[in-house]
Image (cartoon, rainbow, N blue to C red; front, side, top):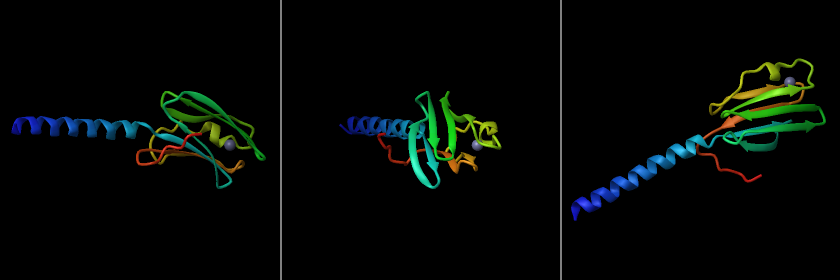
Length: 113
Ligand SMILES: [Zn+2]
């Protein structure tokens, strides 16, 4: 009887650990324009997002669990030359377009678009 309870506890613990890991993997790419939220996208879903604002456009590509700005009509092209981001807290900033692309990880509530 005691062993039974122990096994149940162990199984529960394993499930809890797995859940913790899966939440950690569900990082979101959050796009902010001019201080306002533009949208958030799963880092796991490969896609190309065209962000059009009054300042211009940025093409955000999510691939292989990384997000990067692959095209833009901004003047300095700093965002396009920025490294792809994948870690919680990393960001790509496009100053001319007032655009911030940021990774948020575990603990964040997922928003349905
Ligand atoms: Zn830019």
